[in-house]
Amino acid sequence: MSHATATATADESVEFGRLLTGVLLTCHESNVYPSATVVDSASALSSAQHQSPTLARLSTMRGLRGLLAVSGRRAAASGASSSPHSVLFARALQILSQPEPVRLHKLSAPDSGIVELRLERPEARNAIGKEMLKGLRSAMDKVGADPTANVVLVASSVPKVFCAGADLKERRLMGPSEVREFVNTLRATFSSFEALPIPTIAVVEGAAFGGGLELALSCDLRICGESATFSLPETGLAIIPGAGGTQRLPRIVGRARAKELIFTGRRFDATEAVNMGVVNYCVPGGEAYQKALELAREINQKGPLAIRMAKKAINEGMEVDLSSALAVEEECYEQVLHTRDRLEGLAAFAEKRRPLYTGK
Image (cartoon, rainbow, N blue to C red; front, top):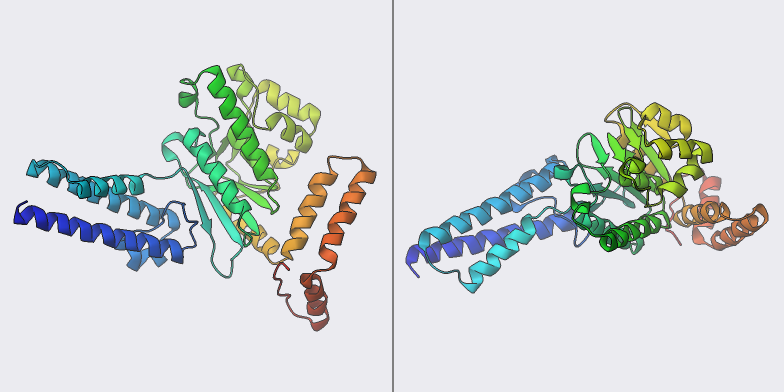
């Protein structure tokens, strides 16, 4: 190995180590879940606090891809075969530079307890393919296992689209058994999301079609911008909504209205969505996230166990007759009766101060 080549390899190793250090530090400081996509690079650490998570994440990807490109050019120019070190180095960079289609981010104080789930597949308008489905499933598992999570915001980092539905280009390459497995897994994933014990809020700006609308319907609350559009267009493709749309939509808008929307597959706008009850609030374009965050903050200030039990009582009670539902309510009330938070709420009321709930 020549002196120049050795120097280049050493420089790359130093730069790689610097990037990895930056990534780990940023993940820690930004409350990113362990396997989530990084949001900053070492070269951007000095300005990370002044960047949005999306811009910082793009800086990371550009830095890593650039370093990988330089490494490749140097190897080609030297004409030498790759060493085990350089192969591992290149592979690590490739893995780090691949953007993940789903990203989890835990907000920091004073919003600790609020978690963002962001869809980030701009090249396909957030269409749900195998990798995004895997990312959604992983995200659900992480949130469900996190005792500090109190509210989840589901949003898109891609302008003018929430989720365009299933990835039909990928679907064309699947056989019937693959399609069945994919749709069954997607349905189970949305059901798991609906079953999370904490509130979930969908933030819809732009298009929410097919599986995108079904994802939003699996959330507890939905906020949209005035330019949002919605549709379950599956019958136009000679199929039906298969990830919960035929069941959740009629439970929200009524049987007759749901049949009309599904039979025709027509699109409806934000005004109609709020009038039908598909969304809770419609706000000016670009302001849906802020409205959702305001709601999340209100919820986050309440007793965490009370919120969980309220969600359980409503969800389970709606599936049975009234007498059985009242028994569910009694059971859920019993769960909050002997908690420290209940005593703290009473004390705070008497002392005219804000309660400090711990979830115990």
